[in-house]
Image (cartoon, rainbow, N blue to C red; front, side, top):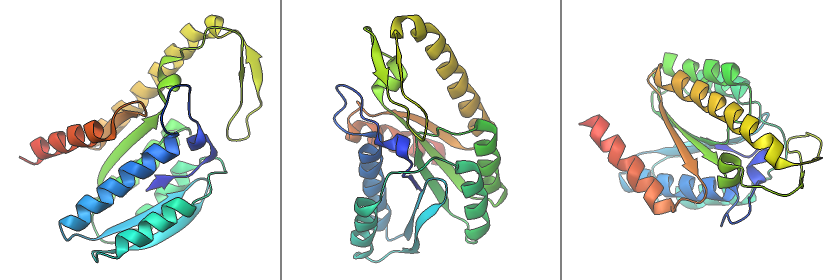
Length: 213
């Protein structure tokens, strides 16, 4: 599942890719790995509704279709992950691995309720929380124009006066999300867009292999 909401367009200073581009690369790599194992892979893109839903297949040409869908995806609307997760949990009849790539800018209780629905359906849930380095570190120093995403207004502010409160709120949000996932047996991984993609995937696969053993 790939988040195509407007906030995924963000690319902070010094980041080589936007959050969406970074998530696309991870999704393509995971799809390729799954197909190499001759397992079936599907793709869902979503924001406040399901934008594409590609049926699972294990055929080699299937990867080209998935890449075309990701490349043509329009990043434009707000996130409404909770209802989407509930809807897809009902649609996914066959037990499988649900791999979610998103910045998760949404109501945490609503998202967790939707994620728990997947677990109720006995799916294995893997959540990659994709955030830009600037969103995590808040490196801004001089007065800055912050442009709102997902229909939020823009505002000029002194980031030095906001940094402490911002980081405190961010930490509380991450802690709530991480605890909620892990307490219900879901894999949660925070991914920074300034991390090398190969390092992110190798670290994840190493952890996954250790869990299976």
